[in-house]
Picture (cartoon, rainbow, N blue to C red):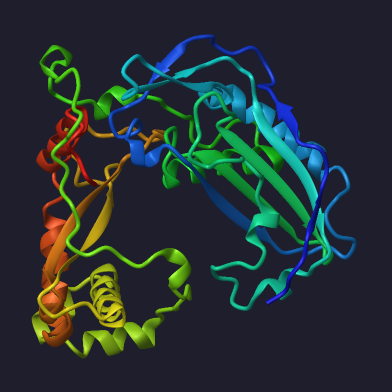
Length: 359
């Protein structure tokens, strides 16, 4: 893989293109979760289809589109604040702006890997430096870096505070920015805040004032530190999926989804590679988007960009996973999926309100 250094211009604060509401926006219980108080990045790669490369005014056009997008997503131009007690967060809509960085890198797009899959080389050169990624209070909520490559290609990396948006929300915001760059007059999807739709059903007066020792569930097996693991991408195409299906009985082979097949196979392989003791209890956590059709009451409207992903776990012993059949693991994954209901979501929100949810 290629190694390179990006040459960045000075970071700029980009404020909304027009005046926006000065107000305080509450976050949901999911948004305020301690585990989401960090920054995450979304990276898009673009090849060059014109002989002379990207237009010279592209950076100024992207910056102008960011300013216009912040009119619609004006809370993102604000700053997070902790309410007394430190458990709940709100967004002060101050229009202080988001960070924009223009950069160049002496590398060609094809040198970043074929196929272009994570882990990407020198990824820190393509994303903005946000400092401590776990410090979110009082900092910009969105950082955008545009890196032009030697071949004329382009990398756009958006780093955002996870407390304000999940991955689906980040894609929605970035798509809005890119659509505006292309000349679209307004966003294809208008953003909606509506965080009250993911509020706990427990009245605030009934919540405990302090939980020094919350009853969190604990894992029976902790994975090794990330620096002891080898990170590698695997591509599952039609041939690989067909091979997995052949390992299942007819009924299950026909009804299993690609997600169930891959999750079950990867889970078995990962547990085997970690060489846990046969009686060790392990689990896989599945994430499901509450924007989906399974969530019936209340439905999340199109344009919602807050955190709306909840988890459910499948648990088994190492021996059951590694010595048992793929069929049994697929069934465990399916059972975990079926737990994700409106009732389960409400229970998660109530546990978050009590500070008892382990994720």
